[in-house]
Length: 392
Image 1: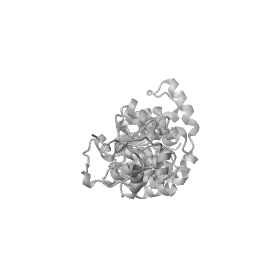
Image 2: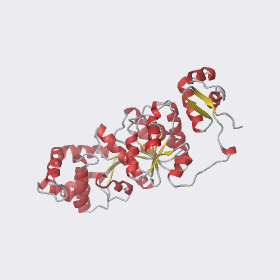
Image 3: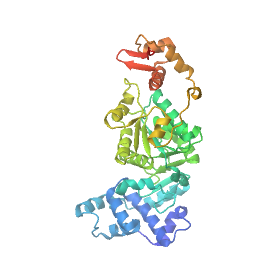
Image 4: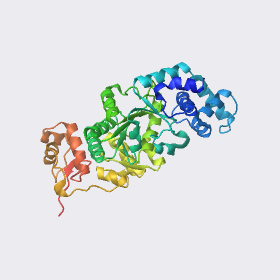
């Protein structure tokens, strides 16, 4: 592996900063090499790069000697992971793709590096690959992660959009993972109100995943930021999805889980947020919905704050709320009114009966019931749903 300044500049091409001297160019290129050798969150790589710099650590690795920061066993296992991935052609190919796709390289030496990620210690990313305005990464303080199930219900989509639109419209950046379901709803709502939204991908920043979100990811890149810690051309694997979640939790001040099943990957993001002492919130859903079992678990067992509005999220962030008086609140939608009219304060009714009375689809009714539940206008029980009886 050629670590000369000339080779580094030649390989990096337009990905090198105009102000980088020879040493900085070599360090930047060595960081790219490490990004190809180590999988996200590899603490062994993080420790030796932190101790010796990317170039110094790479020279030690290629030299074959001992490295003080790693035990003999750790170093032997790490060499097995890394050495087989040393490929100049693969690195050159990914750098060419990055330049062709307008993907920039951000390292700790750059002014746009989001320093919140350093809280991950040796598990912090070695660099970031960015589509969009890399300078916007410095605007993520404060910011909030809005995450949740891919197989979201209409209720979950609605709540995610309401939260993201209110927060992003009020100047709070919304971060998520670009996936189907809650992630996509949050990104779209933030874009609709002209707010800043950032998508962290598990695969390379050069291509959208899922493919069905190609247009959405392109839209985010135009006005916000699309970020990955793996090189261009990298495939999104299950491990990389889980590791990507730590970045979403670390870069934001709070994580809000809108909807999540009992074993949802969103709970992984929530776990990282809790471990990093970030704010953690969860949106309650219908007690009959499996899609909200995970959020209820966070509320019951992990001390998550109950989130029913964007003001609750602002409170979680330590910011003032924007409480509106009764006259300022938006009226309920016609569909919500239809569902409310189909309910009784005296009799419990199951969702199918409510749907028949309202002349609506059952899944639409369940979404509206969830909203009414959040507003304290209805209550759920084993026999179904009913309006909250008026206080005597």
